[in-house]
Each structure stands twice: as C-alpha cells, then as structure tokens.
Amino acid sequence: AGDPVAVGRALFNRLERPAFALEPVVERVRQRLTDLSSCGALMSGSGSAAFAVCRSREEANRLAAAFVKDRPPGEPESRVLVVRSFAP
Image (cartoon, rainbow, N blue to C red):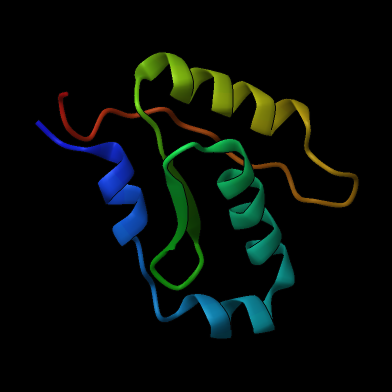
C-alpha cells in the first residue's frame, strides 16, 4: 500500500520554475491545487498539466469540486479528472 503523504512530500519537477516564469498561470493553478490538497501537488512534465495527491477518492472529489467552483476570474477553465493511481 502507498503512503499519499510521503508521495506528496517527495514530489519534485525541476521544470516548474522555468515554466512558471514563462507562464505564471501554470504556477497559480499548481498553487491552488497545493492549497486544496492535504498531501501535495505538482506540475506534470513541462506544464501541460498539474495534479494533486489525495488520501481517498472522497477527498479527491471534494478537491476537484472546490478547484472548479473557486476558479479565479481570468484563469482559463481547467479539465479536472479524478483518477486512482494506487490502492491503499
């Protein structure tokens, strides 16, 4: 079984800083996910996606709903998916 908190603490992407400098909205999206997630969030690849690690499907569904509901003015609409990556 996986430990989502440990996974969240271990997240790292060295492309985040340059991507954030080029496209600040990517940083804002990742920061919103970080603020909503109890485990962690990260930009994926070179900035085409961001994700959050959650403890349960219920937490992930709550995070997804809050992320969509609280989209700031001027931020592009995001496609939000809830997926299972490992079983507890």
